[in-house]
Amino acid sequence: MKQSFSRLAILGSTGSIGRQCLSVVESLPGRFVVLALAAGSNLDELVGQIERHRPEVVSVADATKAGDVAQKLRAKGVSPLPAIHHGREGMLAVGTHAAADMVVSAAVGVVGLEATYEAIKLGKTVALSNKEVLVAAGELVMAAAKKAGRELLPVDSEHNAVHQCLRGGERGEVRRLVLTASGGPFRKTPLAALQSVTPEQALAHPNWRMGNRITIDSATMMNKGFEIIEARWLFGVQPNQIDVVIHPQSTIHSMVEFVDGSVLAQLGPTDMRMPIQYALTYPERVASNGLALDWSKLRRLDFAKVSTRRFPCLRLAKEAMKKGGALPCALNAADEVAVAAFLERKLPFLGIPEVIEKVLARTPKTRFEKMDDVLTADSEARRMAKEEVDRLAVTAAAAL
Figure 1: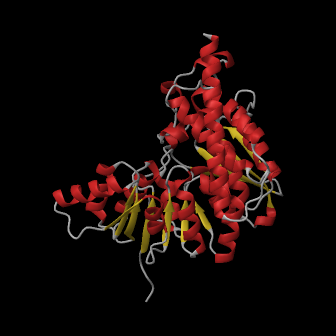
Figure 2 (figure 1 turned 135 degrees about the vertical axis):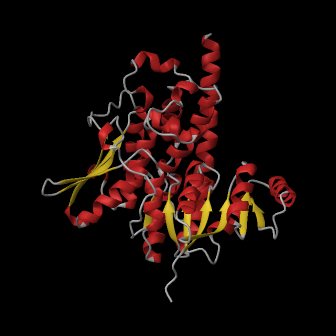
Figure 3 (figure 1 turned 90 degrees about the vertical axis):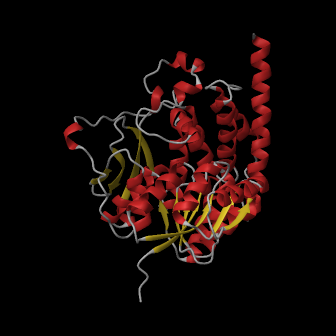
């Protein structure tokens, strides 16, 4: 008898994508069973998720938090308790849960990389939101997916849009992929004013509600750089077949141009539940419970070229992709450290690309043979990025 529901494990269940994933699950009763959840430190959110979905296995950041979760669950009368793990071992326990047939990779940062890789090797279907998986280790991950005979299902709105458009033609008929970018909050800000941008200004995205790091990456356009690298691996195209255009309305999520000049575009509301649901229910299309584009409010669709002078992070990402090896991994690690420093007011906004460029210049072009190589390169790039942040802080202090 054919199984009528999917059994899910979610890496990053308390983050923005993880919460919206569970919202989709709850809107489609009977289609999914949640078997395993991995979170970090947001224990109250996790406890609520456990109460609603009763997973068999959960994971949190460390042993202390594992004890705290158990205590909170007992206080709420939850019985039996799920198996509670923590740290690296916990992420792996969730990502490799034997009974899960789909793993949603939504953990922020490199923390979800190893568990996602192991899930792919086991032949599980992976709904991918975690950018680090393909940015840091694209070649290794796609080789594992090919060997397992499984397709990665993109959750990010841009790659999800490309995936949908590619259903309209053969891969050999594709001329190029066009990823759209909102331009973030600073697409018209005078260049001289960017040096004094505050975290509050950078977090005020005009179209999307996202986590802090991805919102800053949207403001610097690094998110689009990451997406180019991801698209290169996900869809098997060459770097020169991927373009980016600024589209401030964020209504067209991406486009595919075919060799005959035809262009297919995917349009939809700025609501991440739509691409999440597409990935979770693929290859079916399921009624969206009220998610729909409001055509009455759609007055115009604007497009513009991207200025790499305004958005140097996009240039850095393209350079890292072309050079390959350890550079895309270093790009991601340096960006994460620099963004964190900016949010902590240790680094100016324009210091983000400066730190990344310095780290890339210091990174050897080493090819990865195994996941340990990726993790080592990530750790080394973070170390260098912290050095560069400290150096910039000293220089800025001396200039005062």
